[in-house]
Image (cartoon, rainbow, N blue to C red; front, top):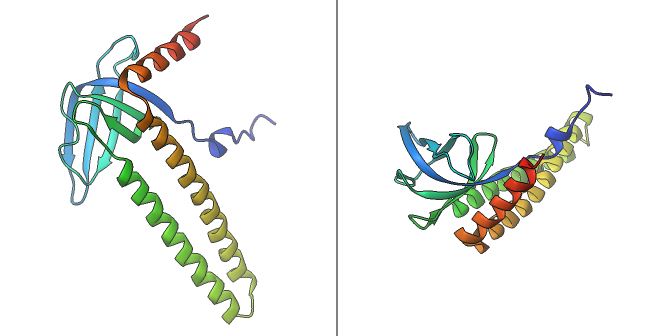
Length: 173
């Protein structure tokens, strides 16, 4: 059944990019700062791609910074700035842990509500949804720690070599 393709739903396709920032735009909102980063065209980046990132911190990026990003589409999930020697690993961990804490509280709330209401069907449905999201969040946290460990452990030269080998593999016809 061609119409039932869940591959994009079950597997988030993160990609690794190493690029130098050509242009940077910042838009400050009430809480967050929105960054729009444009990359130079080089051997690792055949197109001038544009990426987006949202953060509470200011001054994360400057023009001509060399950064390694783990992106999902055009949105930056994790980054490591080699020029300024900074990253967003702690911020990403904190967001994921806060999400897990919220899901744990929601699960406890619906479990207690189910016990008070003598295990009504609607309470059990909400409890199962919260528990499912909690398990998925815990798996996602494990994957996040794995990605952070990978991004921390490799140097810029090793990452350039890996990405250039991968580029040659996928551009070979």
